[in-house]
Image 1: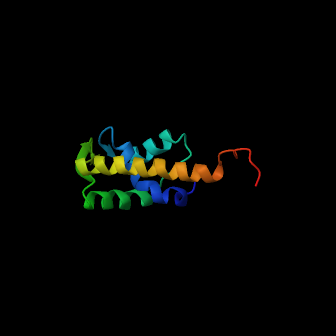
Image 2: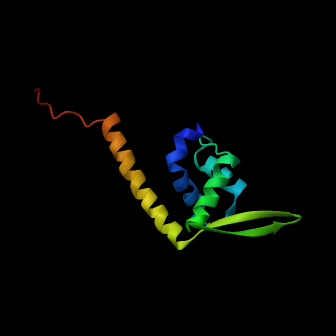
Image 3: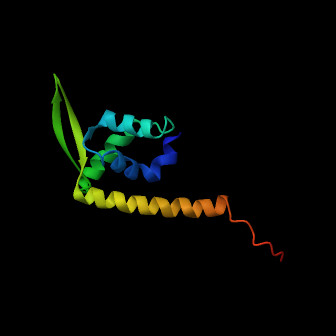
Length: 113
């Protein structure tokens, strides 16, 4: 699926995969891809600026972790990030309900006008 399709929902996707615990960038990409059944493919150039922005506004925190000779930055939700995720989920439910009511309207009551 094109990156444009998830653009407005990227923050929610990132916050959601971090809900269960800290992950590094590649693991975040893999988690989104796995949860979506391979439909959503995020690029490094898309998620790292978003992760940095979410950290700047206090929704994530990060720390460097060493794995052998390599270092990687791991991100985790803050309390504000958990609250923001709850809000994102509420907005998502409202969005899909509104779109669903347009794309799949309820059957007419049977009265012709």
